[in-house]
Picture (cartoon, helix red, strand yellow):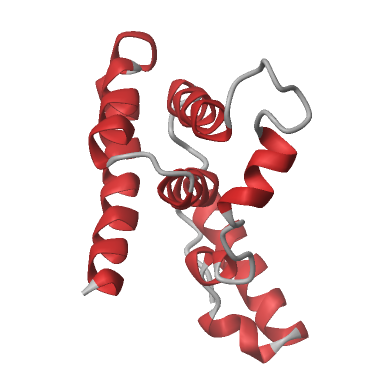
Length: 135
């Protein structure tokens, strides 16, 4: 049933088996699939909630999202779903691939190369998906 030599692996496997017992559909569940439940907000809505609609002299949605991406990178790029969602929202808000990559790259000084690399990998996945859907 479980590997007794690695208690962490045993705990993970036990949790997976419990989830499958409660809901067999969870056997094929992936965190990336969970992201599909939340669509990307339209740019107008982002501007209303996160941009300059409520604060006319404040930051626009794209700038706020670039800051969010920077913060997620500095935190170690451990929040895969949040990074992918932020990149999708950045594309919707009009950010270029260069702006996204540059924001992540700039954080290497604060977060380290491994975090920057992980964030870039996640962003590149989203950007590649976006390029495929555009063709």
